[in-house]
Length: 382
Image (cartoon, rainbow, N blue to C red):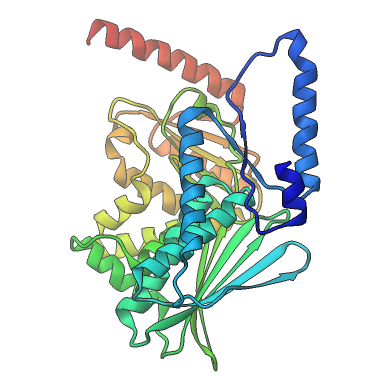
């Protein structure tokens, strides 16, 4: 009945959820599962979005977020001009709004509405969070450093093969030099201020740029939606790790936090030049590795490997985690990358006398044996 009403009245918000908690089917439940999968496909054909969750807590969080966004949309402030949507190339949806940058309620409402939209399209949790924070910081940058009261917001999302969210914030005022602005924010952070503004947007975005036209000065941020392409072996053994992925776009996973290799390297170069260890730790310090744990470094992929300058980021990791390198608690894994990059990583591993593997089975065997020895050591020396 609900789906029939939705088919005739698209103003109705239909929220459908499926539990993905692992479960072993009984023989008499196989047909039920087939019917469930067929039901999901039928929802897709009718244009009904649905979400997947794992367990009660995940379900509670999803429902709370969606209901909150729905309630807020019922009380939208008149100070947000209505969004307009256009469709292009079959898979990009563009939304635009003009917002009062000093109205916190309106900013919160806009972000909540977009988050709900991105969740409906199946963007990953990291992607939605990054895009939301970037939008907040870009609006705050206009509020704090411009004389204008309003800003144009344009958001587009690519839901094709290369999924992404693009955010543009335009102010009808004079522009600024992006590199100098980020450098200024980094200097403030190094001196003890909180991370904010363009520096935070720089760390979270895959690409950050500015344009100046007759209709104003704009900052544009792009966030790609992607899953790790690494082997996953370090995760299997609960080894904190860096994953450097030579792909399009170039990306790095610092622990569980995605970051573009471009942002990582720009921060590393600036931090070394200005002796800014606090900034370096902000970008490289998200791997939760204790002095007694192993630290994994995985390099994979064959596309645009030279862009990431492996030796530069490798030195940065060593400066943030010196004890792991001094105590031989670092393990390298290189796979499916080009020969020059592989040779460079091997040379760096040799410099630190660190084990390096190109075969995933050998890596798994090494981690199995190392884990066993560590457990025995802890048993004798608790």
